Image (cartoon, rainbow, N blue to C red; front, side):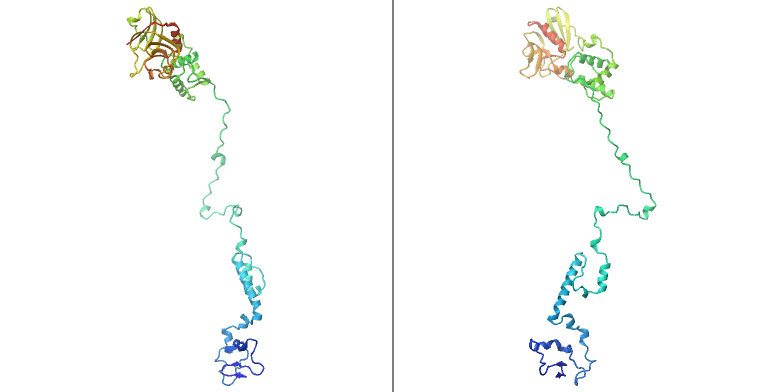
Length: 374
């Protein structure tokens, strides 16, 4: 029996609509969506006045049929979600079950589109081996030629294998050859004092000056090259040039020096004359104490001789010492030999010629007179 007011089948006889769920089984046909609608039923609205709801609302049997049939469709939806997730991660889309539900044209488009995972990675291996074609502005100007590596980075010269010249004399040396070196340097104006035979700072400066003027390595030491060059420019020194009596002329002796054996020492001429009965036996350059430690003046006598003496007050060597007044003595001074009159003693009479003072030490006796004057 058909209810004409609702357009639905109310069920008669054995067709009561019981499908195991009670009367709720008829809800699927409400609103004229079931297949039992009769458009010509008396009292019913015309068919054209009631729109076909199947057009606006798709049949639930297509989208979600009865639960016994809807499970394959859920698998299709699950597979589709997996495929979309795979595509979002850049993977190649597969052909899983249910892929036939996707439109054929869409699958063809996805297959034709290049996959971003098939492009070459941006690494050094993927860089083009040839440069790209120049732009319009570069077509009119020729590119600069690549610099030749040999002109940019010239090969370093090979180190010289020749050994350096052998050093013959250096600071601290003392010999007759040093005396000859000083005499030859004095001949050409590089050494301004008498030769002493000791290679000190004054001699080193003189050698350095000679080397620099001749474009030689200015080391201050006399090597074989420097020595040969100096010998070629000078002559053999005479005996007077090698051993002059003093750097300065010997002063006229004080009258107290004219009798007996006397060490006659002049502060004015800075010389010492060893005299016997008014005659000069030997003479040598000397220097004296500073303003704060002056050398005493007057007449004294030698009271002690000490060949290898060392000062207990200043811890300084005083070889060939001839003591005449307290701790003051005539002795050899290596500092005087090296630095000349640029320094001073602590009151002693310094001698810079070692051989002369050594000979003097052997000749002077204890008790001989000492005269220090201006």
